[in-house]
Image (tube, rainbow, N blue to C red; front, side, top):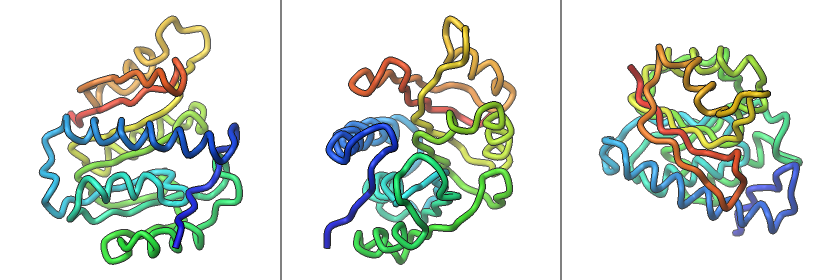
Length: 192
């Protein structure tokens, strides 16, 4: 019953697995640094959940969390689909507390304690700022995103990004993930 989380569009399957190991560990470090009880039934939203990898990351750490993954299944994972994501969730044995929906964050509604995302917002271009507003409207205590930050000619792309959302989120930590690339960072944001 092997789970297949797919291949990122700019890598091989083996490279994708190596990246996932790094990201898994970095997200767990991020979870440890925020003040949400890892044993409570918090509500988590995973934006751009793909085939369920970040759902697994969150489910392994927050063992009683109710997790919703959303994705429009167009983009960064080769041959990804809602059915494959649901199959993975079932194989992982977390189906009772984790769901996957085909949805776009810009149209999504609900309330969550924590929102997570990995390698999604950079694909949205300037629409990502609408997505940040939408995340804010979901009222999470924290938003943790791992992504590639390259904002044109700005000397510090992360500072540019943070300046655009400073009325919604305060940065708790910006973690460099040099094992992946200099532009990949994990931002831990606290809702204002």
